Image (tube, rainbow, N blue to C red; front, side, top):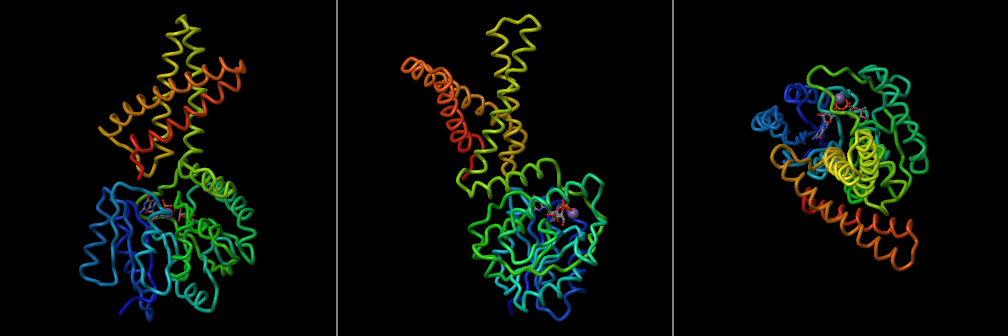
Length: 364
Ligand code: GDD
Ligand code: MN
């Protein structure tokens, strides 16, 4: 028999939480035909193996192991799309969300709500599990931003649009799937923003528990991705997010280049030598930043990173060559230095972006 409810559990390095999670679901979901799918991104600690070991003894447990990819939102999407149940719930794999709320959430959606969201911020909810005052402040800022953006998309403003704990009809998830950015941590926000019509959302309070085993994967780069998600929605997908990130990193590279140039000249180096040094350092820094941020989901490591760096330097050198060539030609034609320079730079960044995406990071 197919399950009525698929519980999607994104997990990365959560080996010690897998068995307790299944036990907790088993206790919470008595009387409901449920299954759980752990979506693991090839964690080095053997999370997938732990899930598979349980799956061999219990048909309600499944595991999707993804290789060469990382990302909470994209993991959730794949887990949800693997479901044939009527309803899909998403819950963190570290036991911070309160699984005993799931039957209530299911009842709310069965009663007609589009989405049931576990909220730490409505009466009876609690964000006690947030690790630090900084996390609390960041969380509040993010919530205000998200509330501004989602205002038009939902019938009543929700207090925790950043929640990673929710339940939705599977058909609805499927209908929205193609419009999701799949970037970063905020899959719920992504879903709400993707909806073509207003959503009826019910919030169910829960207590955010402190983490017991493992550690949080939320870091500065995840926050940068959140900013990217918001930007993407504001631009309505007209410019690819990766390009924006790539161009911002490039702009930062120009600053590094100029700073090194000034320092090296100050230290007595001639202009050409100082500028060459500045350019090389800027390109290496850009490679690092793009590898960590723009291409976080396909980050190159070890020997592949070195090979990628060399390729990146080659690609960018050609890009610089094209940039200068075009700027020169335009300048000769119309004598407008700034315009010619801007056109050259634009061609350079588009070349660098397009070629490094396929050659260096091998984006499909
Ligand atoms: N497959 C996969 N891939 N899972 C991941 C990845 C990844 O790259 N990164 C994180 N996860 C899993 C973790 O293993 C955990 O089960 C869950 O996603 C949440 O990650 P945490 O690192 O524990 O996040 P958090 O506790 O700081 O933040 C969570 O709570 C917030 C408040 O509800 C997340 O759920 C946020 O989305 C949520 O806003
Ligand atoms: Mn957590």
